[in-house]
Image 1 (spheres, rainbow, N blue to C red):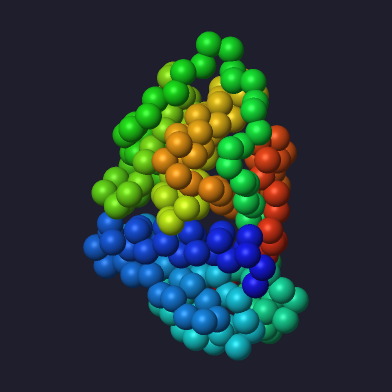
Image 2: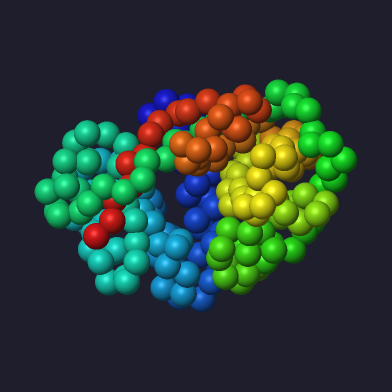
Length: 224
């Protein structure tokens, strides 16, 4: 694996470890061919990233007892193995990495950023249970001053994992997410982070590219 993808995957795995520590009954599983997070209480977190086709049977054995889950592939052979198991293709996402400091961007007019925000408010912006993000060790939450946009960070070594970036529908197009993300990553750079990694939907990729993020792979998501 190339260095950029390795950094992304290491931070993703560390973030899943942190979520598993916060939720009773959850567990993170690491193997040479995959990583997985299993969380019966919060099905949105039950995912596995499969790196080799030979890991598919073991991964599906972990996931299938759960009511809701997703599995991700990044190469054609693993995709073929998942398709042969009867799984259906879902969305594609792009792991991305930026070298810090991020590119300068014009903040939204009059925008302020709340550091140390309540993670539950960020979860709500994502349409999730507020308890999803509370109690996760090392997690930092950021919100725009009006509470309309937010995200969370989980540092891992000299990288920082960015997730749960969301803006309330009526406030989109005002540059709030970019302003919050820029401020959050400036903070992390000052604390010694060298890179930032995240996973983007196609819709958000342009936002991240403006701040200097570049794709390091493509995940094809699959479901039962």
